[in-house]
Image (cartoon, rainbow, N blue to C red; front, side, top):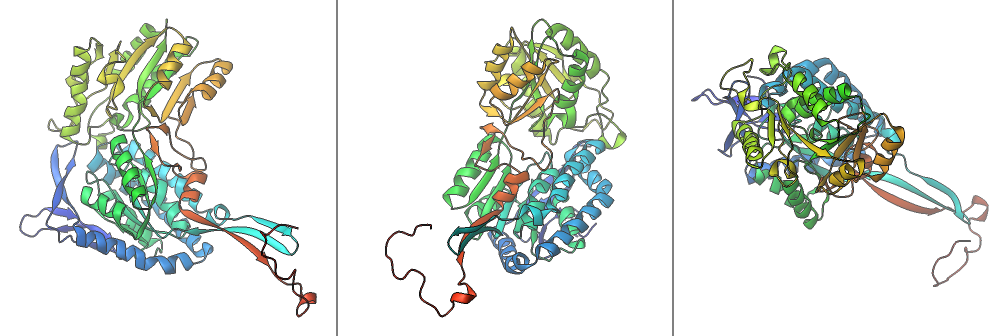
Length: 514
């Protein structure tokens, strides 16, 4: 048992509670949900599901901590972020093991997730520069105008199961560095990473109450969405829930950034290096068992390359080692049995819709416990664009191939979709790549890069049903989202004029510059 868990003395079951006022808090709600080790298929602990009293306690703690934290100098807040960065780097192997034990992704992938989150931490260490306002001297006689940025107050973060460390770290460092206090509601499927982050922030010197972890389900989500003390909501998850979060949060007067689902396409032109394409289709389609909002789920092959490309992908898929993420495997299990079964059901749909199952993940022989939530890499050719396999976000290791006759047909296919999160083009033609980046209606684009997640000093987010709200994650959008701007118009009397005649006298007309 660690300080982030408590144990029921009667059952011996470990329960992950909440992190409030700088300590792990045992839940009193009486409600819990199981947390699985996906590679073993067994429940390893329970997670508390907060009731209204616990929700209010968490928000109240963050509200009480806000004034002192917001009033702290930028330099002192920056020092906490620098310390946290070093602690995260020092102990990231420990966090990776926690992620693998509850999510199932292989340890190397978990370390990659942490590294991407650490990029945002490093961005936030530069908060004094990011928070700078503007100044205009002498806009009118004796008058200056300038702007400042100030924190919002208590901000809520609702994060998904697929990146239990990285997604919170998209928002946490910037929100905290900007002077806000944070209540994080992690996924109940893998809650321990959030508690780990809270402990490490405390070690870095973050005052108690500045970072709170509230575990729970929809009741906790709704508590954050409707509380008058929560100023903003940052969400990542499926499109239907993102839309619900956006509509509910804005209805209750909050600013909301809600990142939704995706159906990411890779357009392959005939001049592309097909070995490079095949490698990247494997990496982007099956990494983290396809449980990524930036995973490539559709390869759009401009003929005549489809047959050769499918052969290359099939050959590579056969070399992948599927199994327990702690054994050095290439791909781990899916997060739950229910999710595994849902993803596998799409293979049946594909068969019914006349598609060709080239590689069937249902036949996988994993290097792991037979009770794990296994589904191997799946490759499906000739997927009809009317099939649910094409139109819906599957969120698993299922890669579809759609054949088209031209660049124009492929572009139209991508642009006609409901989502606009990420896309990629593979080609050796610079003109075609430039045309694609201008014409495609997607927020993040890769040119010979399959997963175009921007570095931290750019912003992450898609178009259409992949993003609700005006702000993307991290980068300049993140700083703007977590701060309010004030514009100040200032006039000070010249020392030589003090006690002299009034400046212009009484004038009820509209103020003018001059």
